[in-house]
Image (cartoon, rainbow, N blue to C red; front, top):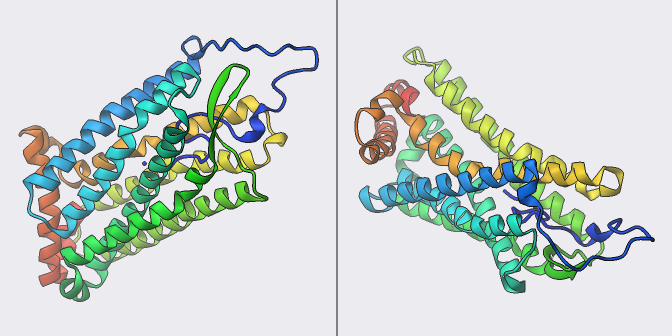
Length: 347
């Protein structure tokens, strides 16, 4: 679930955002009054944020409970568990952003300003990296079954997850460095105070490459090769895997593209209408945050037939969805050709 270093679901401001607020004849107003509940866009985004929090928090909690406590520890359950934990933590911090959105003021102090932003970025990057890891793992299992059989292990998966989280932490350090709190015109805000030369551009482009461009390319390449592999298999009759893979790639692209577009526009904020820029960043972050509850749906519920899932309890079918994929991968590793046919239902 990756979001702006400037508007990471706090909808706050950079150090330049104070410019142009007052005209020479205006007097500063120090009595802050929140107007969010009077604006249609703000109310709509608020409703969306609450829904993302509820669906993402409880949906990912359910996945964590099943994959972490109800299932045998396998490579697949490690992927599901790590991804769910990432999205769960992200959703757990959304109430701070929701409160900030309603009050239009940051009331939680400097430490929480830095901490919440850093934690959200850690989970943004870790979630994206885990989506990439899942794509690569499926690619290796389908294209190199013998190698996967010899090297694909729970230990290797655990090490890979730890490395992904460490990289996510490293990329989130700028939030701890540049995040600051300031009171202006009677309003306390949590914002990014880019005081070093070109620091804003460096942070934006590094996060664009590491958090969108490179992961998207890897996901596209992996799933394209998997699709070609399955299409060339005469035993593969179902078109379902192609629809699922298309949904996975489309969800990633649609969720994150608007956010990154407006973050890039923000670098030259003086060339754009301030209201359009703010609105675009708010909508973009909402769309990106939606990935936090889409992930359990895409990676768990779409793996098996949804109608059959409705006929039994939610918990048992979620467990079956993850377990079936693990069994499918195992069968592929022992019999490559038959695995291609069975993978058409589960990948």
